[in-house]
Every structure is written in structure tokens, then in C-alpha cells.
Length: 115
Figure 1 (cartoon, rainbow, N blue to C red):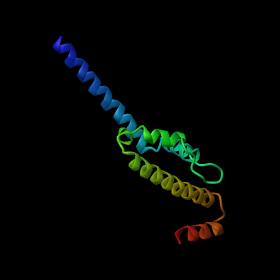
Figure 2 (figure 1 turned 45 degrees about the vertical axis):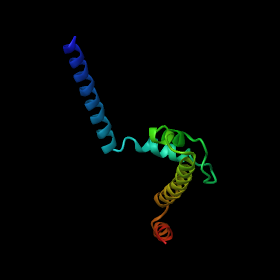
Figure 3 (figure 1 turned 60 degrees about the vertical axis):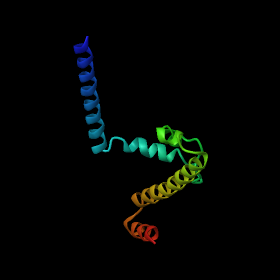
Figure 4 (figure 1 turned 30 degrees about the vertical axis):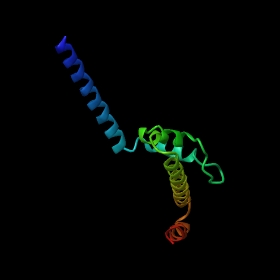
């Protein structure tokens, strides 16, 4: 019986190591970026306002640490989340404008975003 438990534990550890290797590889090749970009895009409306209860927000709240925060800390977390989403959305928009503009406009875009 003990050998079976040890074998099962070894198999679980090996499976976890394999899955971690796959995740690491996917991270290295950028496989997750399309999903990240989708989540970010869907977390703001067309006016750039952060959407409360977006899929991104809910995924981040699933972290075990969020549930243990006090109400005040949850409010601070929410404020920080909204601030970061707005900042990242502006950066993504500037990047999209940059990528889709002519070379002369790219210089102006870069100059305006670095001020």
C-alpha cells in the first residue's frame, strides 16, 4: 500500500513538472499575450472607462490573498486595479496608433507619449 502511495505521489510530481515546463515554454514564446490583450481590451469600455466586474478583474480577485483582505484593503486594491488598467489601456492605444501610423506620425506619437 505504501509503495502505491509513493508511486502515485511521484507520478503527480512528474505531471506537475511537465505541465510547469509547458507553461514556461508557452510564456517564453509569448503564447499568452493574445489572451492578455483580449482581457485588457475587454476590461474597458469604448470611452476608456474601467468596467467593474470584467473577466480580468474577476480572474485577479480569485487570488487567495484578495479574499483575506480587509474591506479597506479591498477598496485600495480596486482603486489600484482601476488605475493600472487605465494606464495600460492608454499605453496599448498609443502602441496601436504607433504601429498603424506612418513613419512621420510615429515620431510625433513617441514624442507625445514621452512628455
